[in-house]
Amino acid sequence: MNIVLILAGWYWLIESLQVQYLNNIIKQSHRFFRRLTRLILGFK
Image (spheres, rainbow, N blue to C red):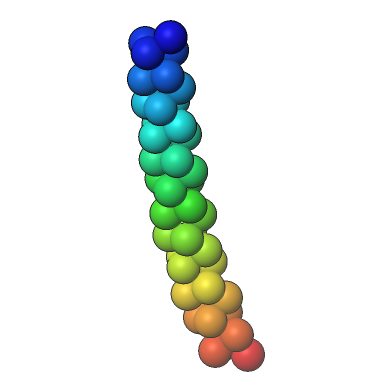
């Protein structure tokens, strides 16, 4: 039973780390698109 609880805890930790990693990727790509649209709007 303890092994199952430990594995479940690690699984939760890994899940949360993956979500944070994906959020960082989304934020970085969003920053790129914001900069790109700002440049395009500046040329008009």
